[in-house]
Length: 42
Image (cartoon, rainbow, N blue to C red; front, side):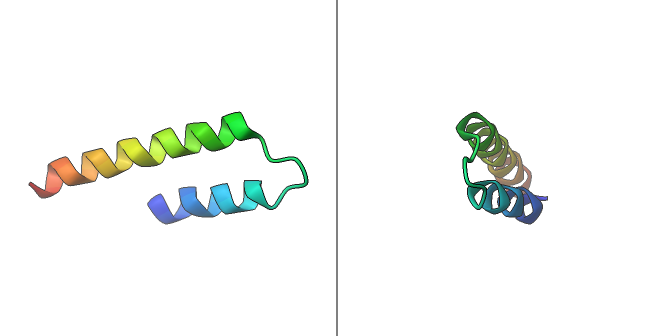
């Protein structure tokens, strides 16, 4: 899931006018995913 979200961000950044709000949302989702995974590993 994380890899797909990162790929989505890279694809957005490759656009002539990347949507910054969309990239910020992806960053929030990745942060949430990292937190969830960290809590599961403990």
